[in-house]
Length: 74
Image (cartoon, rainbow, N blue to C red):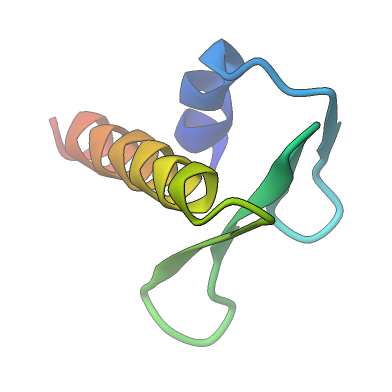
């Protein structure tokens, strides 16, 4: 999750909460990137009043996680 956190610094967020994963808050919605405590999985969740913005957040979150996993395996 440390690599995910570093890669996510490029996101322009209004707030970042790292209490239970990484929750990025935006004016239009939020995204949570959270590693599972019981299985080898990372979840990306997003919510917004705009379906387009929520999908954009999900896509950005998945790319960040994929890049971090690739970098960790290198």
